[in-house]
Image (cartoon, rainbow, N blue to C red):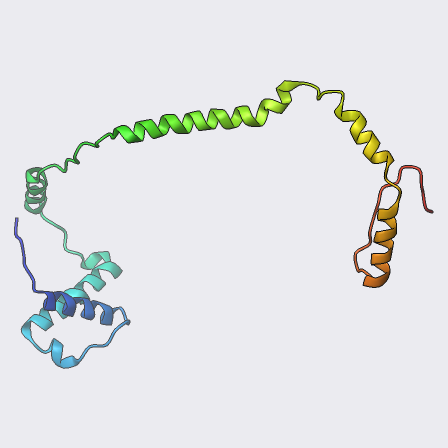
Length: 163
């Protein structure tokens, strides 16, 4: 297997030629007027020609496929290191489950308790019966001083119908 080392300048220069061929960059013609520059120029044009037409593509030989298969077989397999399991993570997952169960119990508890004590019902009735209508006077006075409201106030009165 051949390993080709390139300097950072050559890599950056090749990237700039690639960008220029794609119409995205600028390059000076003097940079291409070297043997290496012409080789890179020809390579990028060959790549473009092959991408546009399959007839220009070189068909690899069986020897090439054999060398490629051998090189792939000789590469070492990539093995990831084993995951470390931390005890804190296991403890936190148990805590999360306990918190979820406690939340479900807290939310569903009112449905299982049953009826409220009978003493709270008369208190609500007493409060409703002590309403003397002064709140209605306050709301009417507020409407009078606030002006016309573009939103109509709607109330529900069971006995009163306006037609």
